[in-house]
Image (cartoon, rainbow, N blue to C red; front, side):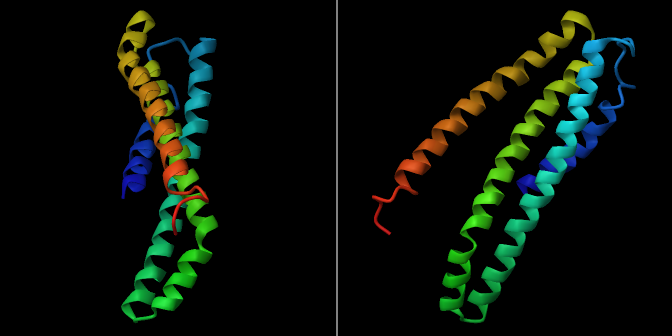
Length: 153
């Protein structure tokens, strides 16, 4: 559901990609680069969000179906066989979050003018950088404590 909400929010940000909400001049090179970057990031965010949602939904449906039918062995085999898809789905989710975070900053920069745009975007940039550092730490913890070969399985 988180990915679906992010995808919906990203679709709403597409209105900023055309630059009509920006008061900056259309021939402003920085503004044009922001518009193109925003469009690419939003398209990526939506595509990644759809992929993530589909992968985890399909795995969840089949897993619950197997368990509901009492096929515990089938569930375990299926779930273990889907490891690469869960990995891709997780990576897609992380990329979706990153592209949305950067898109949000681009949309803020396109909405406001001159120095004001940077003051408005500053909290989003700071929280984004802090979040990235925290995500990186969480990934390292999971890698060490959950996915290392030395863990009891």
